[in-house]
Image (spheres, rainbow, N blue to C red):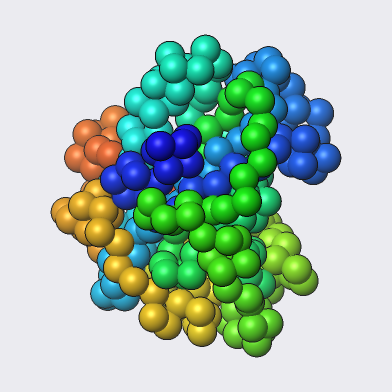
Length: 288
């Protein structure tokens, strides 16, 4: 069994691919290149894995991605043992990464052939749509080109594993602050998902956008209107299907310090920010 077969055989992964680091570095600034060098001094290869998380479009005020277990932990817990085995078997350096990394993961996923980029700037899996997290392994293992993407243990030519964006413009039209540009480019300063997570005070226009938004954390609008997501399959990963927390209210956050908040909601993707942004967003909605 080759490396991609072994990677794709791990629980919770729908597809795996590999790309050459030198195809990514042109878009990295100096600080990110230095970050890569600190992680793996002679890095040359990036393995990419997709983790489906869709559990259905149920009601709630938290984004769909944040209702289950923190995906950073899920990705690390899945990829870390694999990376350790890779180091032991191949005598290489291998570092597992979630999206808190120097790598542009969507670009890496596209170059690895596991999906195509939609107008909403997200990678699309043909079975799970854009409801996927991206995990990577940065390694100094020499790059070995492969003619196939590996999907659930089956090797398929890349052209058969991806879907074309219809360029219908639905995601761009629904984006409240016009954060979506051409060719999948996202202006994060205008992204409502980023805005709900930002600490500190908001401008009047930003506050109004949050007030009108149905969620207090994240945004799913550009995914929910996408035709390619209409028939997205549900994830079979218990981490994203069980013990879901769809909603938080003011009472659940009242009086909590940052530490108490972390203890009350451990292992959630929204915990890192503390309770302040969530309280602010809830208060804005109550004002309306």
